[in-house]
Amino acid sequence: MFAFWLMAQKKPSFVFLKLIIVAFLFSACTEKEEPYNDRSVEDLYNTAMDRFDEQKYQKAAKAFAEVERQHPYSNWALKAQIMSAYCYYEAKKYDEAIENFNVFVQLHPGHPEVAYAFYMLGLCYYEQIPIIERDQKPSEQAQKSFQEVLNRFPNSVYAKDAKFKIDLIRDHMAGKEVDVGRYYQKRFAYLSALNRFQEVVNLYQTTSHAPEALHRMVECYLALGLKREAKETAAVLGFNYPNSDWYKDTYALMQTSAPETLQ
Image (cartoon, rainbow, N blue to C red; front, side, top):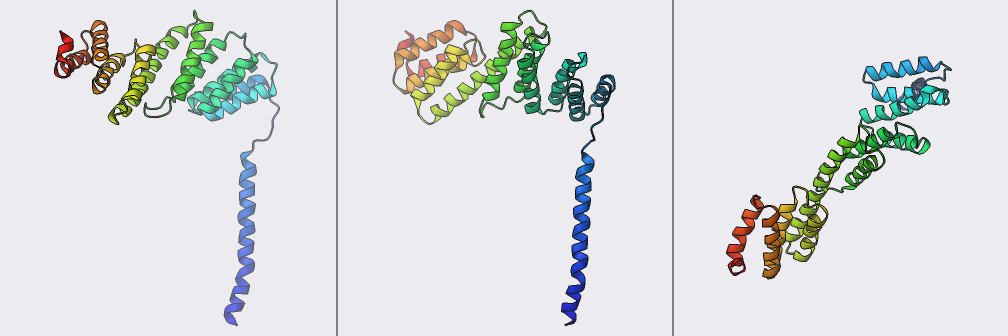
C-alpha cells in the first residue's frame, strides 16, 4: 500500500515537470524567431555588412535577403541579392548559394553582374568536385558554368580564370576516364578499357593524362594480340610525346612483346 501511495504522490510531480520542459522548449523555439521590424534600407544593409565583416556569413546572408524582402525596388536590392548568394558561398552552403545565383541570373539576365553570377556558379560546383573515384557531376556543372562565362562574356575580368579552371576540370575528368579504364584493364575487360582510353585521346588530348591513355591502349592491344594496332598507337605516342616517361615504357614494352613490329 505504501509503495502504491508513493507512486501516486510522484505522478503529479512528473507531469508537472513535463509541462515545465514543454513550456521551456516552446519558449526557446519562439525566441529564435526574430520579429519583423520595418527598417530603412540603409540600416538593414549596414547590419548585413557588419555581420559579413564579422565573418558570420549565414547570418549575413539572411540579413542581405531581408534587404531585398523589405525593399525589393530599392537600388540596394540587387546588390543585396548578390551579396546574400556570396555569403552562402563563403559559408560553404553551396546549395543555397547556387539557388540564389541562379535566381539572380533568371530574374536579371541583362544585368552587368550576370557574368559574375555565372562565374560564382562555376566556383560553387568547382569546390564540390570530388576525387576521381566518385561521380563527376559537379565537374560537368562547373565546366558548363565557366564555359558560359567564356561564351557570353569573353572580355570580362572573370574569363581568364574561367578558362584556367576549365583546363583543370578537363584534366580531372580525363583522370576519371583513365581510372575507369585501368579498372577494366585489371579485370581483363580490354575492350571496355580501350573505349575509356580512346575517349581520353579523343576528348582530352591536351591534358596530362593523354600519354598514359595511349600507353594503356598499347597494353590492351598487345593483350588482345593486336600487334599492328599496338604499333600504330605507340607511334602516335612517340610522335606527340617523345620525351614522356610513358613513351619510354611503351617502347620498352614493344621491344619485349612485339620486337618485330619495331623494324
